[in-house]
Length: 280
View 1 (cartoon, rainbow, N blue to C red):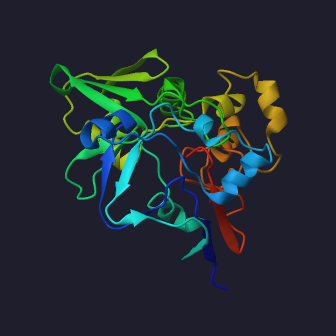
View 2: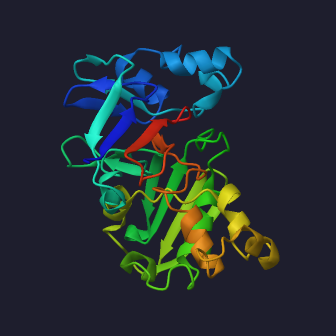
């Protein structure tokens, strides 16, 4: 039987149209248009969860300075189910094409970079140092704060761990170190000028990983005897097997995400269903 990929429409703002304008913050939007954003709206199903006390108000779920996207034509209507052909787990890389978060994105024409999870960035020392300024108040799908620690964890404890990542990406081999001066600032420092780094960021996301969740499966943060209690005999032969399972965006239903949609069913089921991330 053909499998169907069912999405539930989720954004706090649904945009219709082929082109749009992007502003890094509401203040930038005000400076450009003279219009102030004084109230935020949300999908009716999320508003109902707020009424039930199951979610904080939308103002508490958004970053302090959220990204502003102005549609070319009009704001879309909430509701409905998006059904898409789904070929099963082997189709895993089809998901990020329509369900992605990133520090930096391409603009609608693919000509320049625009803000994402980072509200801005600085390129210093002729392209040797890249400084990203994260949005204060951004949260993972479980409501936990997203900070520079999540990017450091990904760089140092996942990519930098030879058991988890024996083959390093090319850009990582050019990296000297990553620093986090504060919770909302991340500095990538390369051994030499690296002019293509923003292209790598926009293409690959570079969001980091949810340290608060994954550290319970990493021996640097959790005693091995505790990790072994979470391993399933016949499935996990090493802690790496367990960590890989728990960090898999496709199969780990407990994994917090930053993307618009979050999986709620197993990818081998007849219908693979993703629901709204209320903190997107």
